[in-house]
Length: 255
Image (cartoon, rainbow, N blue to C red):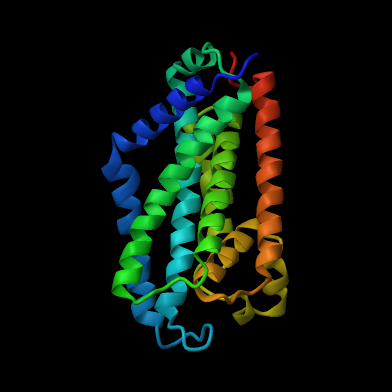
């Protein structure tokens, strides 16, 4: 099959318009919900927890919350779109279009990146204005925001493919995505944990995304930023490969 990037672009625009049509629910609601974490945890724990040098806990918390929002919303965009299309029976119209599995994947993940970054940017702007947050290495901030959103968009597609109904997807979110996100160092440095939990954190891929993203703001992190980049890339390639195999075989999407 010849490349059909025009069709890929059209599908990408369709996915962006899908979440933009309910922007209050898909963008503003996650921003408000995440800012509540900042107001509650930042206010209560600002003087109780030590972070990196003179960095306040609120400043330390904001990059973690931004990344948490990026991860959750990128995952939600592809997973919800795919499961809705499967349940409503309109996925077949997309599959009939002359685009390859790779183009299909790029369009969906591209829209997930847009949604994740837009939500994260909204939180970040408020954090930079209200809490005097600055970034030391914008390059790393952008790299980890895009790569992490792409990985979670791919993971959301995988969840959407293997789920047969909304209950399956909800279970994946509640028992996999949410625990890994909350235990990824969003609210703390892993050096504040007992040794057992520190070692366990190194097996959580979300930890490396949060830690690498936070490095872009403070140029300080719990592990090397290059290790975080490597882990993020490995999981992005792994998830993308699995998705492309399933899409080409039509597993659970060609009924």
